[in-house]
Image 1 (cartoon, rainbow, N blue to C red):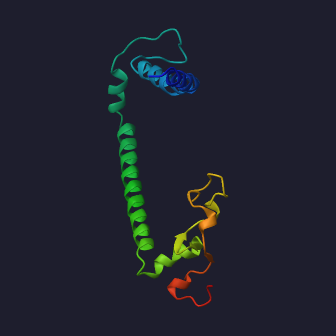
Image 2 (image 1 turned 30 degrees about the vertical axis):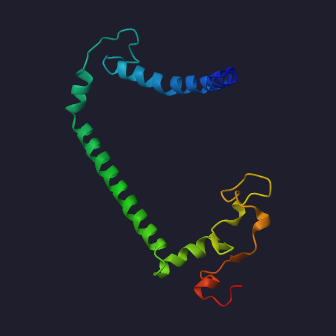
Image 3 (image 1 turned 180 degrees about the vertical axis):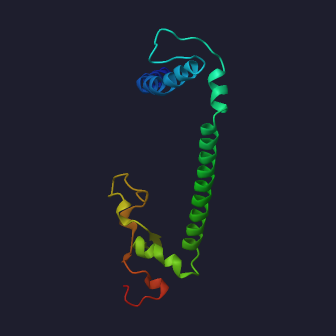
Length: 165
């Protein structure tokens, strides 16, 4: 490994260290302390009188009805929320992707489409200016583009809309 590469790696390591220390300090440290305290009878009302009671806190928790009710509600909510999100997401994606239904025209109403040399670009302002690297389509050279068409209608000219130029 070259000297320059070693210095570059060292510099990257030193730049990442403060954020890493902060991340570990703010997340991992409280988690470990809470886990250790869960095996004791620690109380803020008696700060110096802590005893190690091993799994008694967990055994007591498992014997309460409130824990099992909360666990059931959490599981039902999570399963239903994920199921509904997946079903709705797949349904809308399928409807918007299918060009044989009128629902696919919602995409043209919500996001006006622009056609550049026959290629639909949903958001034209993501083109970078010449010489910059901005936007997902910034790789295109704007000097090589022949034709740009903007359609704010649900139907573009290629979908038989005579008012679209």
